[in-house]
Length: 387
Image (cartoon, rainbow, N blue to C red; front, side):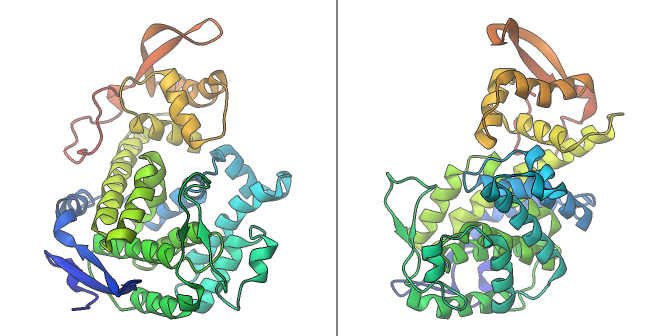
């Protein structure tokens, strides 16, 4: 049985998305039904995150950063905003291209609705401009690659190489992909998110290009979410980077090996729920703060809310460095944490015996409890006990 809509039921179903080995991609909605219900309950009356204004706030710094971070590129928000304001001010051409290409790609999907081969070709041209090696360009056909591609796991040479679909099969499978994208599917915005992540996975599975397949797949998923007005879920790239991207790689590999995408869908839904919980907390903090908060302030809060264990400066620096290029602890403290202290959003609980820099003891801090409701019943995925 190969029906597009039957995966909304309570058991294993097969999608019209073939895999090698005479298998079709399968999905078991029962595996993630609890988190699906939780998300749909959460989104009731959350007008601020269910808006196009929220999309633009998230897309043009945080999602650019996160889409690149998934690829191991840790440009910080200040650099991204500098490139968007004046790309010519950044002399490193590759660094500039990785940011400005996504910026222009996101502008493209905001202004175009049709997702088909010709529009994908235009989008891929924007996303990959100046990033593809000459030898790969020589093996590109009119639309897709015309040679094998070997895929590194996060750029590591000590792991077994994966391969994309045999290049002779790419046009046929991409036609199947577009048929799936444009099948007239109906459902809740959470159902649309599930479909977007099936698209995300299946594009990576086909791997129609030599490079930039990952960011293209994620941008296509965002494009579909925009068309479906599933605005809260545009945050999914950040959900991958802030909650441990090793699980992202593992869930994609699991889906390839098992032909079952259920684990990948559940992984994405749980992590998106965490990010959405952070958004309503940060929004409440913003509304209870007399100072104007900028993108760096929100990123710092997001990192704090992402942390486990004791929240102190040295632990925060570790979290920061995981998602950004290296900075000294003192610079991280002064640029990220000190502004929130000055605004009264965080406060020091105590100092430890360790030094965070020079002769300054490491500080343990918490978020000011007067700035948000810690007992909000919608907050189920975040541990706020140390925050």
